[in-house]
Length: 322
Image (cartoon, rainbow, N blue to C red; front, side, top):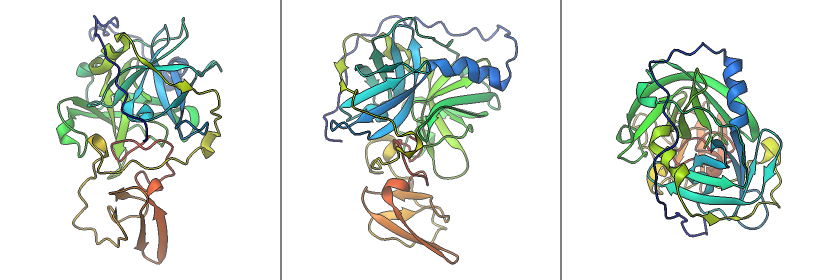
């Protein structure tokens, strides 16, 4: 990331998104109805470093009808060019960074649009563990991909390796893929619960989002910094996968999870396979390689594709999805 850190000065005003009343009983929605309601408010984001080439793709959600979008901060940090694509087919090449919350890894963007579809905002503090949740995101460069699961827990960031401290985080099981960072997590009534920020490569579907009520105020920030035009950025769909992994020793969620002591690793350079299965690795630095041998299979993995075990689109800070 060559560009200096860009954080807009913000003035927070009263949040204009009323939280849904937990006492209100809404008609149950089927899974396809939830996805149908959510998809028009989900966006695809292309980013570039200033050379007109797509450096990665990610996700976002419209939070205000006048063009304000929330996404994961690591999606846009250090990038020069941005392009936002809507479900309607409209493309916006002029994008402004309004504000960002580095601790929670969420940023607010603005495009020159009005009358955009906006979802109701839920209240994650009233969401019970085991409740059904859905994610709509730009998974593996495939826009408006939906997945479902349950809310596993609401916990403090200190409980999650590498997630930092001082804020709540939602753990859920709806599957993610590279490109899902910045995607929207909703409940069974299509209300926004959080913004997807990453996952852990350890275990199965241990994914995380920042509660919407913690970051909704970013949408009311004043001022901002405009990115260079994203007009030259052309999506390559699922093939847009080349994006260097963020060093795992970077501040925040990019810090490496301590290796499993039960795993006897074969390492080269500063990469460590973790735990004892192919494709699940922690990289201590980008650019190194690891050879990991399991049974009769010997494979060499580039660090850019190790953190999630898949070719990354935008590498998240949690060793997870992007």
